[in-house]
Image (cartoon, rainbow, N blue to C red; front, side, top):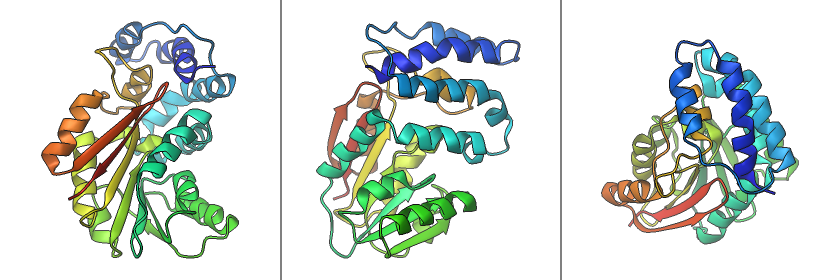
Length: 260
């Protein structure tokens, strides 16, 4: 079963739902450029992407799309998928835990990434613009017995100012981070990390010049076009990161970079 095929199959519904919108033409053209799938769609993810397709207009019209309740529901469901869980676990396995340092989840949504990181990191920090999201993070962390955590209302632009602990790991993986300019995300993460700290980024990237199947969804939500893995790695190296490693999944790419 393929996560990529699920997104491609759901594009037909997305195109139908946005039909008539003044901005729909660019999204439709982008969707037509996605290469066809050769495998069967993952049934769970197909439902998740259908949900997003049905609600994309209301999410787009929200003052802050990443904070819309419908986007929260999509994000949490997506982060429970095998594709996402494997991508984050792969990154966490490559990122070495640093004693005395915190793992910070940027735009944490409901804290799925921190739940996965909890066995390795003694201090967990969730940063999210939504107070409701942070309440859900707290419920999740209490549910797994975590006690050393902090919940901060903020976004990618404010993490360096808000987080007081030494940051050994910055996680940028939730679907909300797909709506952020990647250069801003990389730059802010670098300024937040302590020397030797690591950035774990999970994102849908272009491969070999082909449009990622999630690109039309991201564009419909007014997010930036996904860049290629090579471009993102160059961006990280230019910012100052070193030892950049990447792993490509069916739909998502995992990148771990270290701040010297």
